[in-house]
Length: 306
Ligand SMILES: [Cu+2]
Image (cartoon, rainbow, N blue to C red; front, side, top):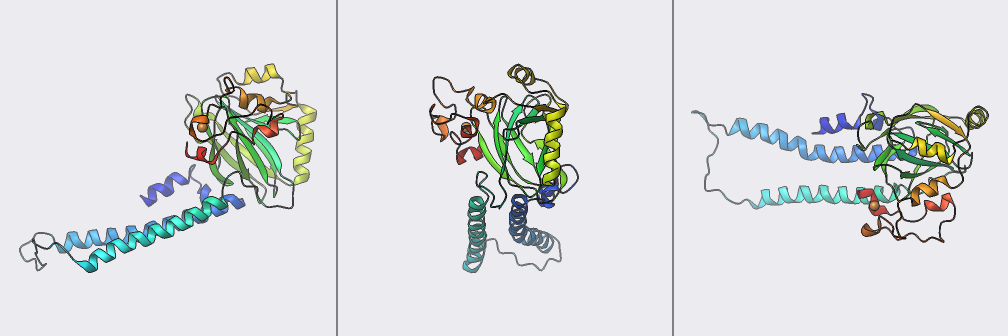
């Protein structure tokens, strides 16, 4: 079980979640280790006892193991096998509650540097990344400055998906009709694998991308390069992009005003928040007048459980 879990967590052969490159992923790795250690405390004695009991009490002619078919109660044993699980679950509960609060995805990362906003939209079957402050957009690749907190605002204009850059932090769902917030940061330059971690149909497996973290001056140079070598993304261009199909990497100099907000509110019918039934508050038309505000409302921690 542990080996299976470890194998699943490692993804593409590299132990990505065990090789964190940012503060969020580093804390999540600690949580994984603590949980695994607590599992080992249970598993090792259980497996050892299983082997011992099978050998010691097996049916054979010269067996000297005690045979007590009427045995029914032992207070010492009862105390041991109730106390140990209760202690382990208590430790797990305290650790989980503390990490859950510390790692709440929408909690800003403490930094002297100003955060970068990237608006993420999962499409069939590609990722659109908008940089509202830089007024550029990319498809299926990301550039981020190192050591700078990145505020991802995430939605979907297709079936639900899941945005995951394992070396920077855990996944978060992208859902139509709402915007989630996720803070991540890369502590060092590098190329980090990212994927759609939620099955979304035929070309789901093509929804991978690379997030490249570079020093700030290289990031600025990249923004300038995108601006000077690319065409703008238009509303018509976006309508084409959202049609089902795969895509190579693309980049755009300029994004339509309020596109992200329009995507998020596309699924609001008669003023009803499509997520109102399970914890999200209804969107108020006046509240969000620009795209940044779109991420402020309608999202709720309960959606982490989707
Ligand atoms: Cu929901």
